[in-house]
Image 1 (cartoon, rainbow, N blue to C red):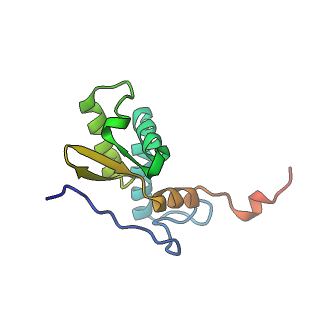
Image 2: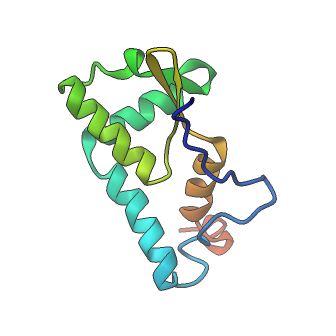
Length: 125
């Protein structure tokens, strides 16, 4: 039996959970989801772990490859759990190791949410 936790994937033409922050005010539900994501990334160790997974060759990393971040293994596990709970990482157990992946749709949704409006990108100073 696998401990894989499947997260809903965003297809390329599907709107991310939240609109760009410059498009309209977030609803209360959108703000809760977005705050959970940013809160998870608000810790330097978590941000580093997220970056290690996101930048790892092949788009996934074994916990054995990313656990050297200056904290104990139980602390690494705690931070990885928080990133999974926020929907930023997925995981899959293979034998004795757990592999983590950042879904491309998560990165795309984050980038879309933080993009500048067109009028600001073309404005001259």
